Length: 367
Image 1: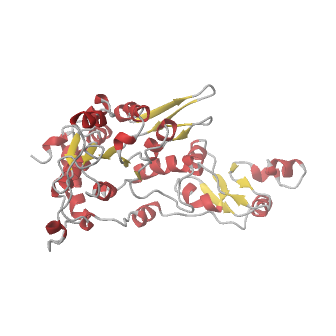
Image 2: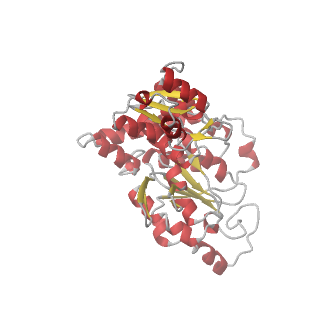
């Protein structure tokens, strides 16, 4: 709007506005603020064969990930006016996408921090190799959250196409880190159990992605699973089956990708100590049955692996043996997925990847 007013009043060289898209939010002091969705806008500009894109400096690295479009970062409206009238002064931003993806693939957690829980670690490895959903059941302080947070560290690294697709969703939702050009590691989303169904699936007057879409190509972790409202859990059934979420409103209908691994954690009973070796459970069988029935059978059927996670005893915590690192486990996961791709080599590669992500026949990986 500001450029339109300037152009109509003769303050701009209108010829220089051809073949150029301007994106940004104008502040009261004349600065240009960042906006959501700069990456999808750049992709659309490339599709429309528009060669130049002027964006806020905050969104420049994100938009520059798209090849075929020259991206010009600006800080203020004055920068835009100089760019239009002089045609120089601002150099297009160049980004090495492969280098950026490599640099961003680092983790602050590792499975070598987890002592004991060998069975649970093995179950997580099988789940990540086959793209299976998993439910961990154990008493408080047994390490369920600690294990879940390390799942992305053993998943195969992002390909550039996967990173770009995930970044698009985070950009549209407005949760992309400031100045970050790419989401380089698989997302790990852990919403609180008070979340609404719209927050989990997505929604709003102008539909926005929910947690299931923000976890696309990554892990959605639901701690204290029975504490989530039943209607919230039930809306996940369709995304778990189809890998997409369709949000229909009177004015529009949008489809967001939502192919993720679901990891859940829960106590075995309301007090949390059923079958625990160190503490006595005071819950009656009827109370335990009511607690477990908070989750429907159809939802539990979509969770392939259910694993007990008992409390770790003192000897295991003080053991001198060094736990296995995430890098070693990831290598085995990658090899297992390569076996799966080889098995489906007669199919198209895209179909094979999809079947691998869905965990098709992955039980044979470790026979």
